[in-house]
Each structure stands twice: as structure tokens, then as C-alpha cells.
Image 1 (cartoon, one colour):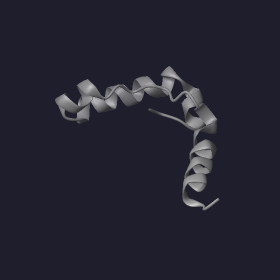
Image 2: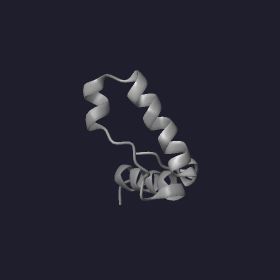
Image 3: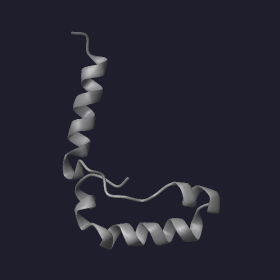
Image 4: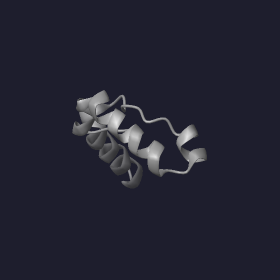
Length: 59
């Protein structure tokens, strides 16, 4: 998954990443690891940091 602010580029970025993985990754790996846009988009980093902090801090 591609997330964060860069994911807003959509297929323009994802197609380049897919081509790079297809040409340089092991065939088995590239066949089972789809390159998709993260559903959280630009909020992924902030939500991930909040979830991490919540799990690490005692309540």
C-alpha cells in the first residue's frame, strides 16, 4: 500500500511503482503483493502515530 500525501498522485505514481516492482522484484513476490492506494490517504501517518501512542501509553 502507498499512503500519506504522496498517495494523492493516484495511478500516476502507482503505475510507476508497479512497473518498478515488476522489473526488479522477485517474480513470486511481485505476483502476490498488489500495489494499491491506502484508504487512509494523507491521514495514514497521523492515524498510525495515534494508534501507536495509544498502544504504548498506560491508561
